Each structure stands twice: as structure tokens, then as C-alpha cells.
Length: 246
Image (cartoon, rainbow, N blue to C red; front, side):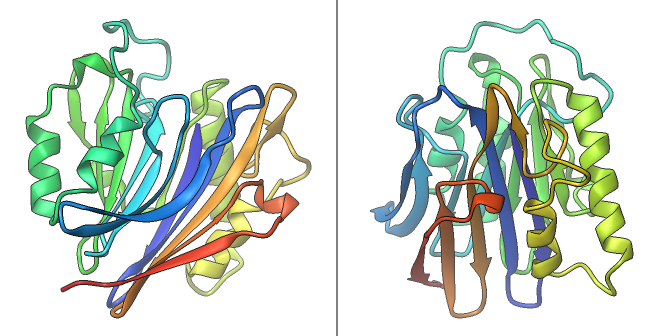
């Protein structure tokens, strides 16, 4: 369960992510910088699954993962094989690759039947956002749906939550002259009329937004801000920076 938004710029992009999880789930390990396949990689880690839901590398490429296929046409449970691997392993593997072409090639040739349904958001400087989904039966290229710069998932009421959050996003967008990173942040910390399972900053009895990530890529560097709390309960976070490679 997550809400991911982004806006592109001439030399990079901003990518924001609320991670929603059960209150009983173990707290994630904060991001660190490590070297993998000659790239510097930044990502938090899920101690239960061993993977991650968001990652960036020194090429300026980022990969974010959301549970569910987020298609809008098939929101009910889909019969699929039992999960053999954590979905969080996917961003951890893909971010080691040095180009969008290599990542997209790996995505198109993968056999995801061992994973439960998911959606991947792939961003890189100078490239349009790319979306890919696995619905439990077939793979889908959803890149044509990436123009709005927002995607959200929920296990409680997938269609209703998505519609509510998109409406809230559109309401904020109508009040601004342009979609910019500050508008995206305002959305990620918003509750609408009150905090609920439907608000972007999500709160319900058994689950809530447990962390917030903000990746900013420009011509010089990749910065990754992370705080282990909901945006509305701001707590000190840390920004990790790596030089951007050409």
C-alpha cells in the first residue's frame, strides 16, 4: 500500500512516496548508500521481506513498487499462484542496472508468476515516466497512464481509495498554477476533511502511513530524503546524497 507522485524537470525529477503498512509490521531499516554493480544505490529495506519499495541509483534512475496492479478495471482479488518471493526484491534487483533500457528489458522478459500483483514506476532524467504491472495473470505496460503523475494502492478498497485520492489531488492542482514538488508534498501530507483510510496521509485502526520518501534528481546529484513517520507527524529525517553519473 503506497501513494507515489512525481513531476519531471528539464534535468531530472522529484519522486515522492508515502508507504502505508500494517501497524504490526516491523519498522523498515532507513536508507543507506551502497555500491552495487559499480553504481551507488540508495534505498530503505524491509526487514521482513528483505527487499525495498523504493530505490534510486547514481545514474539518476529510480524504481518504486506498489502492491496490486492498479488498473482500475480489475480491483477484486485475482487468483494467482502463491507468492514465492517478496515483491520488494524487484526494485532491489532492477536498480542495480545502469540504464532504463536495461531495466525495461529485464521487466519485459521477467516471469513474475512467483509474485503477487504489483505495479512498478520507473523514472530517469530526460525520460517519460514508465509504468509496468502484473495482475496475477498477465503483464501490462501502463506507460500511457503515467501522464497524471500519481498512482496509489490500497488493500482495503482499491477502487474507492484510488478515486478519493485522485479527486483530492485534482482539487489541489486546480488551486495551483502548475504541478510542482511543493504541491506534491502538500498532497502527501493531506487528510482532506479528516485522517482516514482514504486520505493520502493514511490512518486507520490497523494501518497507517509509516514513512515518507522524497527523491530529487538534478544535473548534479541524486538526493534521497527519508523520514520514518507519516508526513503529518513530522520527525527528523536524513537526506542522503550521491553525485550523479553521466
